[in-house]
Length: 521
Image (spheres, rainbow, N blue to C red):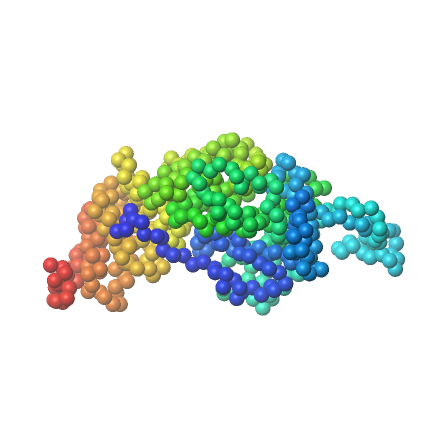
């Protein structure tokens, strides 16, 4: 919209690379993989997005989850190269919530509780219960508990007191906050087990019909080969007795692979929705506990299956955004959002009707008052580049002939300019943006307040020339823009007079410079 090249990618944002993470974390007893939105390049900027977007998934060594119906002799030979390796078997009996499973092993031993301590007894950890082991019983199924898995992980974590590390347990992960200068955010360390077989409930994902032909068969095969993980957390609706032994299938690594194949505008669309949801929905305390970015990412993947990648462009981004919001509304109205890999798993069936109704109303409000919602969102993210992604949508809305007041467009442009200037980026884009606002006559139908804000932000450009390049063509262009803003809104105060005098002084000085005067002519 405001750039000479509307297809220019947004300014590159800082990301935490694997190299930085490797240099920061030295927890060699475990194997970790970077996961979550930072790994997928589907995160909001650190400076505004205060929640943890850095996730590390730890694969515990020596223990693997396996489907007993798929486990072959070759699997055993591959993984049991070391006698330390042990298999836990997956129980897929949960038909209502097929993402949630149990892990078990076949035991020929049994623990018997005894009333008194003996030479053969031992005390269960964290209890006063005395137990003895009875051997040579009939093989029977023993379920591997999930409830103490994270606690054990937390106890083994080497807390760095020197850097003021603090550890908290969040669901299946431990969250580490630190004073380490390399870590701008808390880091979630998710305890996991590697599942060596593709889960049975996700078999349909491999062969289902996709109108967009994404992902293609090669990508599907690669995802399946990469496999999934199992993390120690139960469904919110599971009864207390089962919670202790329930685990969840995690497709985080698969989702990273898929996210890496999205084009620029598929990611932009998701990030626009994510930013608007964060500001206009998750600011509500109750809804913040209900809606999560995983729901939005799931919706994105479903949309990418139904809408071809060639239809996600700068020119169509507004249409795709509306598709996204409409899809969200439809899911909330139907009270059904199928898990991307296991469509039979409804991610939102536990959300009550009242909360769903509030989310529907908020989505409709975003859809029908989009420019104002973007303005508020941009003010929230003013100190980052995040809202540059809104430009394709603003352009479509600004071309709407029924739009009588361009105040919101002026606010959006000014906020974008301010962010770029404050981050010491090139002034070329902000300067081009203000001249585009003038050229497109946005100032003719905007509030005085929004015009004055644009004037103030434009003056920030001129301040960049105070120490050097005062007599430069860019500073002349900046003063020209400020004068035209004043004249468009009939602002003829002393500042206006000073601008005109400065403009004439810069112009005369440039005319005396042969290398510049020819260009001005």
